[in-house]
Every structure is written in structure tokens, then in C-alpha cells.
Image (cartoon, rainbow, N blue to C red; front, top):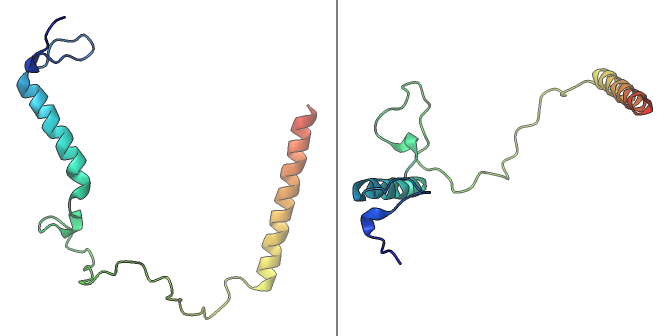
Length: 106
């Protein structure tokens, strides 16, 4: 049985990879795996846009789920517009079902 030395690692029949290349690949993989542990780019002291809004000093752990927005001053749709949209949707649904039945009949 042939002995495999540290510098004789090969990949799918290719030439042996040297120690330096093996070390570089190993370090690269370690750096990529630790990339998720880094800080946010926005927290870095350099870069960043000058017109970006300021970040809050105290960021809450969870979003505020119980904060209810203020009620609207006017309705999103008036009843006439809502009835018109409903009629259009019903007509589109009927058209699609007729088209599907026609394609199945072929």
C-alpha cells in the first residue's frame, strides 16, 4: 500500500497539491466559514454613504409587534370602486375558466 504524505494530496487524478496551496485553501475555507460571525457592514467605521439615515443608538432585540399604526383618514377604496374591482375580477375568473375549458376540449 502506498504511503500518502502531507504534500501529496491530489484531487480526482490531478497533480499533487503542494503544502502552500493546501494551506491557502484551508485558510480560505476557514475565513469563509467565520464570515457569518462578523459585524454588520453598516457598523464599520469606514465607507458608508453620507446621505444614509442615522442608525438608532439602541436597537431593540425584537420588532415592535404591538405598535398599531394610526387609523387612516380615508378609506382605501370607496364602495363604488370596490364593487367595480370585484366585477372585473369575477369577469377575469370567468374568462379564465372558459379558456381552460376550451383548451381541455381540444
